[in-house]
Length: 321
Image 1 (tube, one colour):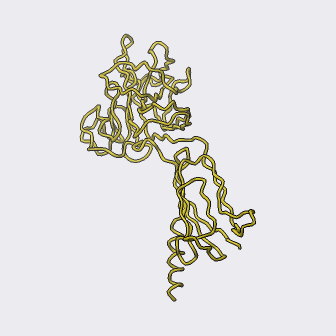
Image 2 (cartoon, rainbow, N blue to C red):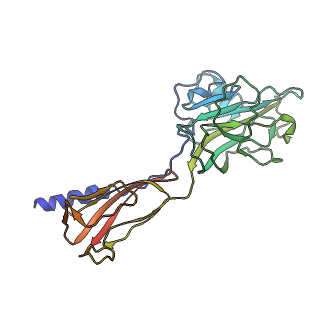
Image 3 (cartoon, rainbow, N blue to C red):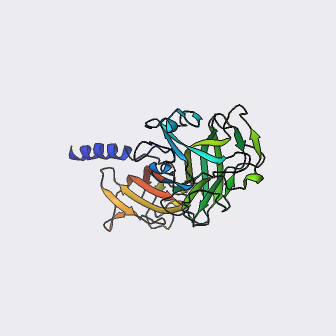
């Protein structure tokens, strides 16, 4: 009876490990939902964890705001609910009076660690033209850089990895997803979003001529950055026969695009008979130097791909003598 209890216990535990972990969003606060407090004035992007104003004073808009100008849904710049959650950011990428450009508001997110050289990354975020913004422009940019910017105003002149298409002003009156991908050089620690071009080089349209203020305003929300380098591949056999005939004598896997791996093998009674943290491991069908019995054994494999995807797999291997 004791062995039956162990079998039931192991089956229950084993079933809980059949979990697939999604790829990690490296912009951990991409929706601005994690904040230190509610905004009480304009220019408080830094209340959102991980974010700050790289140039000028973009605004955190929040349904818990104590100041009407940065409230959600209605605020000084228009009216909109967040793409998700209850917070988003307003960027005044140029405030124009036909003579002078006053603002190049640019927001910045600090990554936990630099991106990996030679790895491909996929970026997505959502943008919306505010309904109190008269003008729209093209070439909204995203810059990944090793340089920390924290300036009072003015245009950041470093060339971004991505811009929306030239000649196509962003007149979206609904939340619209922007996507791109790029290969990192390994130094990029900061992500900046804003306008990086000279004002005279932009394509501009008078999208809301009845709006009295000469604004170029956008809302942004829901940033996602994942390592989309080639996905991991694992092939796992379902039988092996450690009988010394040099044919299929060891339990091995075939793996590609894996940076780390851990495997544990259990008997049907729940005894751990093998473990390894080597990608090119092999099991010869022994436990403590003694051949184990024929039968079905159960494995649990945890791995991390070179694209940082984390996954846990389980299954069975049949051992024949």
